Each structure stands twice: as C-alpha cells, then as structure tokens.
Length: 479
Image 1 (tube, helix red, strand yellow):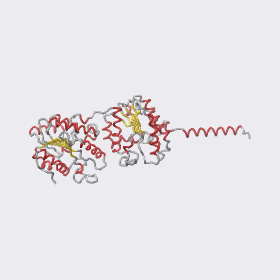
Image 2 (image 1 turned 120 degrees about the vertical axis):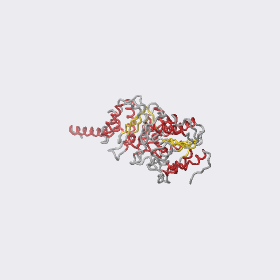
Image 3 (image 1 turned 45 degrees about the vertical axis):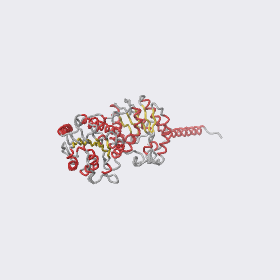
Image 4 (image 1 turned 90 degrees about the horizontal axis):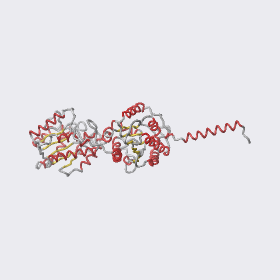
C-alpha cells in the first residue's frame, strides 16, 4: 500500500510534534533560569539588590525561606552573635527553587561583591508537588544545585562555597526522601578547596531519626532554637573557611547607657563608695544586680528590704550597672572599681545582655563564657584572696522553650565547669525560681528578666551559706 504525498507530509508533521513534545517533557526546568517569582518578593528583591550594591559583604546565605529566616526579628540575636562581625547578608527568598536562584544570579544577586564565603542550601522547594505546579526528580534537582555552584564559582572566583545538605522535611509526603536523594547526588561537586560539603541534619532529628518538632515545628523550617543549633553546628567549618571573629565580650568597653540612670555618674559613685568604706563584700553585674539595693543608692530598687536584711552589716557595695555586658564590667574593674580594696567575697552575675544586640553586637555562648572568665581573672589579679561566687545566668523569657532559656542552659553548663577552680564557686539558682514545668514562680519576676523582692530573697537565701563561710560565720541558709 502506498501513501499519498499529503498523508506522508501529515505523518511527518505529527511525528515531529511528538518528538518535540517529548523533548520539552524531558527538559530539566531546574536548570533553566526562571523569573516567575512569588508576589512577596516584590519588596525583598529590590531591597537585596540595594544591599548588595552597597558592598562590604564577606558572607552570604543563598537559598529559600530557610535562609530568608535569618532576617526575621526572632533570629536577630543569634544572627548578631554569629554573623554580626562577619559583614553577612541573607540572600534567601521564600519559595525559591533552583531555577529562581539561577535567574537571580543572572540578574544581579551577587554582582559587585567579593564575599569570602557563600553558604548555599537550595532544592527543597523543587521536591514540593503540593505547593508548586510540579516536583522535579532528585536527579534534576541535583543538576540544578550543581549549576548554581558553577555559576557562583564563575561570578565569585575567589569565594569559597559551603554547600549544605538540604535540611530534612516531612510536611509533604515524599518530599523528604526526594530532598535527601538530591542532596546525595549533588555532594560530589565538593572539591575540598573551593566547595565544601556539610551535613548537619542530625542537629534537627530525634534519636529515632524523625524530625524534632521542638526544633522544626512545621517539619520544614527551624524555629529560633533550631537556627541557633544550625549556627552552632556550622561554626567550626565556617571558622576554618573565614576565620574566627574577634570576641567583643573580652574587650573592655565603657558604658553608654542613659536609661534609668547615668552610667558615668554611677561609676564615679561606686569609686567614691569604695574609697570611703572599702567593702568586704561586692556584688558585680548588670541591671538585675543594680536593682538589688544597697550603696551606691539607685533610683530604682526592687530588693532593698532583702539587701538590708542580709548585707547592711557586712559592708557591702553594689557594683551592678543597668545594661552592662561583660566588656563594661571589665572596663570598670580596670578603671578604679577594684583598686585598693580586698573584699572577702565577690558575687558575680553577668552575661545576659551579651545575648542580644544593643549597644554592641550579640555574643556567642562561648564568647560570653570567655568574658566571664576574664572578669574572674581580673578580680583575682587584683585580690587573689577574694572568693568568687559565680552565679549562673538567671532564666529569661516567659516560656520554658524560649530561645533565651535554651541558650542560658547551654552557657550555665559551660560555667559550671569553673566550679572549684581558681577560688570560684559556681551556683545556678535558676531551678529555684521556676515551677516543675519551667514557668516562673509567682512574685519572682515582673518582666521575665528582672527580679522582684521574692526573687531577690531566693537569691540571697541561696548564697547565704557561701557568704557566711567567707566571713567566717556559722550561719545557715534561711528556710
């Protein structure tokens, strides 16, 4: 049977169409730059371009909503502590897929900057068939990740790339397995020199391998505690790639506060107080100590009654300064507040203000502990016989799962290692201020940070045996 010319031509056209359709279907969209960006990028995109244009950026995060989360208010304390000294910028965009990042890189996302390190984590949205038109195969996603790395290397030839394994997820069926397979397929791009592969996923998992909802409540995005754990897990590698920031917590620095008092005036008052009546007992700290009571007199005092009952006959001086960090305490100790005095005991409670950015960047847990160690060393360099009662940081925040609570527990574990060393006795009274579920007991605090009279009473009662011992007394803690 012979076909006519018209039928043959028609068959060829149909076949060509089918072949072209097959090619389109087989095309990997994960590697094709796509400008089809979500509406919520309309403000963020120009803002980030403007930020990049300013320059002076040494570290960038490139990725999706997980990286964008660093810009959220609840993460600023951790961001400041780990990245505030590193000229860092979060270039993450909620909903971004590999193709979107490729388009951004083609349209100015990193133009004109020369960061030391680029942290890349992308691909989880490519697995999501529920919230996006389609999901890509793990092979296609891996190809998209590799292409992004190639483009970053071409645009930033002197920048080291830290490629993170896609974080675990379990909010949409099948996405978690696909993301992990894509990550497995992409890790061979690491060369150990310009591209480093890092898997920190165990950070977010329970012992049985499932995602910990206390860290990833929606089984996709880390909460503030999760972001802290992310930063801590990544820090050893980041230090190797770009160095360790200088620890501001150990650099003596004058105070700048004019909140409920004048810092310089109080500094002068403390020096005058110790000149006129060299103290046998000193309390050193921030606003929590400042509001305890005693001399020099403060216009805000919540614990006068307790102070007078325990310390009025022990010639005590209050060296607490509102808003002080470890660096302000170091400056004060080195500038007249411990000169010519030989107290029997020094009660030290400092560090909570170092947790957050304010007049200085926030500090990491390790930096804060180093600052506290430096304070103790300074005290003993001036008066080796002074017994130091080092208080653990007090609980902070209304909820037991608050980021501050989590960090303070970590810090106190480190501080506890100082107990018994160099004349230091460590004491953590935090558990005495809380109920069995971790909530503050009634009357302990008025703002979930500072103490009320009942809180000061708990503090004084707890340390009384140590104070009495320092004074050679036989007193016991009150009941």
